[in-house]
Amino acid sequence: MIRYLEVITQKRTHFEDITDEVKEIVKESGVKEGVCYLYVPHTTAGIFINENADPDVKWDIENMLENLIPWENNYKHIEGNAAAHIKSVLVGTDVHIPIHKGKLMLGTWQGIFFAEFDGPRTRMVIAKIIEG
Ligand code: ZN
Image (cartoon, rainbow, N blue to C red):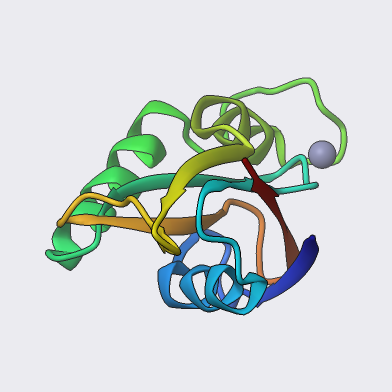
């Protein structure tokens, strides 16, 4: 089963918590045991799992990435968004989460975040639910 999740971002850099939407996709799939594979088919965005209890955590991650990879830095890429490409490489474009008894096996403090690095844009997350 494959599903597409649309994410509309409003800022250049933005982390959108998509945990509830992904939980819904898993529920609708009816799969009790398997893997939820999430893939971002973009070169200037990413996906990661981290704490969603304290919103300051995502702010710290965003701020630190900005410090490490500033928007302006004498990059060669002519499109002008090299920083977004580099952040995408660092964060990664896919995650896997085990499904057990019909539920994602996320830790208590874990959430799934779509990471926009060159917004605002309309983005896509591909969700593949694999039974097994
Ligand atoms: Zn580019």
